[in-house]
Length: 138
Length: 138
Image (cartoon, one colour):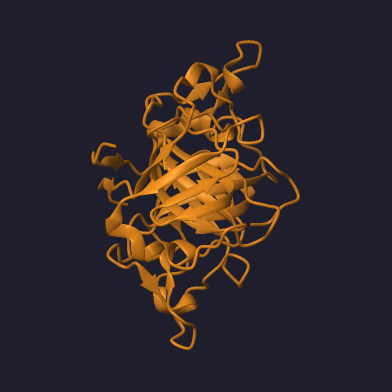
């Protein structure tokens, strides 16, 4: 058990009309807009073989989250009893990694358009993975 | 677009009989053993409300992966044509975050036992999230 820390390097960034966390949808299926993912050219080879129409798991770094939070009122509603963050999808958590299931709508070189994404504009992208079981993993 | 880097802090570690990447299962449903997740006491409040029987998404940092890889032969088989890593589940990728859907089998304080996990012994844990869509696999 090493207390070593690990360094994430953004591979790209989200381009979205969402700029205000306070009014952003909390999940992709709650009216989130389509968005562009713009990748750093250094990683272009890794994007080979992605296909329009495919469902993918997008991992982001929620850089506007609070990392010192361990309990929250789910959905930010004080009427909901406090819960441990690991039993919620709160962006506020020790390692604020966003997990988003989206569909690829278009591919233009280093830019990929995806469906319903609740991440804010300029959110760093850290990984993209294919969905293994369709219909799942969210 | 800031090229800032971000620091992950492990919140815990995997305890598993799997120690050799070369022979470890590639996915949890390919015969992976049950494992213990042992959490750092600093994060115990965040574990509140987790329940035995729940399905959760475990995110790990695959610390034995190669981060400079952008194309791979899927499943490590040279017979499979090279693909961009973002279209595969290869552990080798720029940010080697492991995504595992597991079920909670037991909870003993800071230790949580989970079903079929393909991560190696001592793999750092970076996040735990509830599954949103029940009935899904991966």
